[in-house]
Length: 423
Ligand code: NAD
Image (cartoon, rainbow, N blue to C red):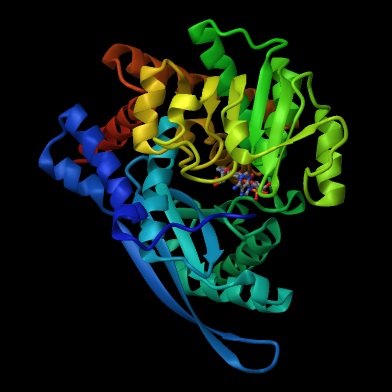
């Protein structure tokens, strides 16, 4: 998965941004100082040093983290990233956002995140396995189905989750499949996890269209970032909402045909050719031009900071469904809101992934597995309820949906802290 890394510039420090977003929500909610301070910081941080034997016989030392941000609503939940630029602040910020994400979809989990500073592209499979097992040995005492449940994230895969689960079970001396999610189906993974993020985004788009009276059937969609989330959004946008794809892009640029593009053929073309360039019956289009196309739904599904103060006045979609994390800058948010564009904020719109991870955790705990249809039905129910809570807060307070999502999520976590007698 390609991901642009955060800048080391202190103003763009992701944890600082996460704290600022929280500060505004706390201010609007009128929470007391103790609750505010409690929610500004992770509850637990672990820094571990991992000696790992490499294939050439040498020993390499890796540095890694696990952060538990808040567990007032349930065990911590959050992925493990493997990246050369990983920092404790990135992990803290992502753990905070996981706390708000699990809260906004109202699943009984808290937020956490993990990271190993490494370049997975330079590691062999056997080195990856030893690193995965070393990480679990170092943090195992804090993990558990009732404590902290990791999952995959950037550059970590179902295979890595399988090694991690196995290591945990060896240490525990018994089976604990629910200790980690995003596992292969053969080891207790959930059906429906592969397209869950896009599917959740499609469900909230459908609800937003209903709430705002926007017609979708036969109308158009544009996808920026034709990867896992973007391709599934295009497939499901057509299947479930009747939308017609008119443009899509990847890191090398995009393709455009106002009469419509055959989604399945485009997916196959991308698989076969590695890019969208040269797809028949389309014109090339730049990523900048693509974002400014007139369309009913825009799916930013690539990177952060693509809709900015510089282009927000030229965006011509009716609904922007943020499958990517952080595609819209705060100044652009204001412009889009003033122009009446409906922005479905990232931690609501892309929460389908963690919701199906939660379903995996539940199925593992029951040791009883659901059908694909059951997973889809329950995901729809969760995403629809989450949209309705956020939309209601946005309408009542007359605020953009992003801040409304913060108010819903933060107030639930604050209430749980209070009921426990923590603050
Ligand atoms: P991916 O790597 O499968 O796809 C990303 C796509 O974006 C690739 O096709 C890449 O070529 C394209 N891209 C890269 N730079 C681009 C650019 N400058 N302009 C246009 N396209 C560009 O990743 P993914 O899993 O689909 O994730 C995409 C976004 O969704 C990320 O922000 C990720 O954090 C977010 N997200 C994904 C999930 C999930 O379950 N996959 C869950 C939550 C959030």
